[in-house]
Image (cartoon, rainbow, N blue to C red; front, side, top):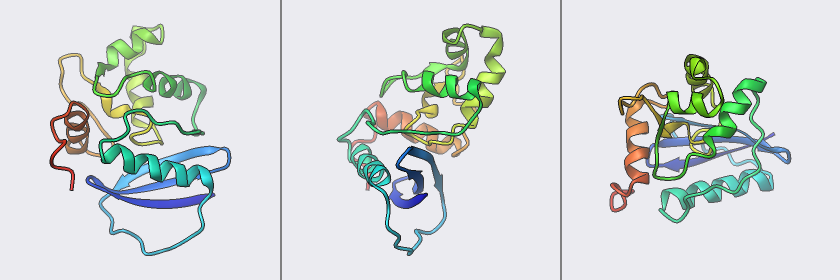
Amino acid sequence: MSIAYLQTPLGVAHIEGDDEGIQKVTITNDAFPSVEVPICEVVQSCVAQLKEYFEGQRQVFDLKINPKGTEFQQRVWQELLLVPFGRTTSYLALSRQLGDEKAIRAVAAANGKNPIWLIVPCHRIIGSDGSLTGYAGGLWRKKWLIEFEKGGLQGSLF
């Protein structure tokens, strides 16, 4: 397992993966670790693509991912990958796309368990009324990401 860290405008991204793909990307307020470890090519590519995203040069990630979760969670996470950059959709709409609007709570729970922050864009899912509901990384980060992707923060990155 390779581990890398990247300082972003939202905190320190912690990236884990191996040759099978990225398994985990989380964001924290922790200080940037000073540990230097060799990282695999997949993780190196993830770091480079995250940098490009925050520099406004990337809207779509082209990475091999390998998140760990149940079959249902995997289906939800695959559906999240279809929500385009700069757009949002609701938990209800996502439930309908998966074929069962009554599964809205399960969809929301799976969304909240997404282990690959930003790359699997769970931040693009909002309440049916347009509210920013629930986000493991903090609602302020969700708001920032949505505004950034809509072009509202282009001049204020660093």
